[in-house]
Length: 375
Image (cartoon, rainbow, N blue to C red):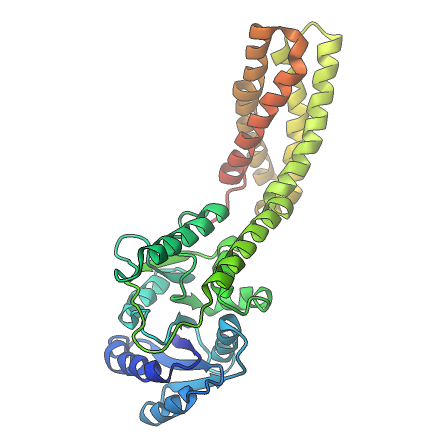
């Protein structure tokens, strides 16, 4: 594979020579089966970082530089990755800090994960085998852990342990897929947004634990307060959009139609027959289930919809089965319990309470079983 290591730099003259030397003399010799290349994405550093790189280019032929105006970390990586794909024919690209906070000796482990079929591999500081610097002040450690936990919790993607780090390897297909939606994220929020979009699009994410080191030369470019606000804004707004315009929002619209059908027939049966409340609800629910299945299949879960007659009926049987388990045990069960305890006069309240808990059951079953994403 053609593998391009991309350090994004701004005033890293004191670090870039050390990083490149380690890569060339200690890391690349272990990767003889791959075509390794270093592309420095430099933002016109005034300290002479580019000049230092050009000196090293005379010593090693597999080094290049992509220079541009300073417009944030994300813009530098997008520029570098675009060059790597279009000009160098990269199959895999690495994001790595030039200040040696990301241990370059871990690169072979990232590549091994890529070879195992992962689309993106992230360096993980927060699980077994990974760590943050011991000499950090307690408040900084708490902030680092809490910020990452905040992102994991809001996105409800606990299988990804390190959302805020910048040590990553990714296939070119991931970059080409996500690039059009990343151009607005030029600063450090680029890291979270890139990973978030890759996860949403179903790319396979792997992890490599590593010990995050404190920089010894130069200064950090990140502004803590601004970064915190950017993270909160991006994560919260993205999650709200997902809930409103994503599958769950569509599920609520379809469910709303099903609710009207269910409630209307339930009301009619209660008023015009002598059937028990739970039985009336069970009958009405079958019409709502049929409506919900067809709209969910065509719209909510259209990327996993049934594309053949066999698949359609197989999914429908599964849908009716899981739905009726919920209707009988949850919705009708609550209606029956309410009828026994308080009588028939509150039948609408029993129905509403049962429907609320049924909603949670249904979305879980439909997402995890009926229209489960193929891996």
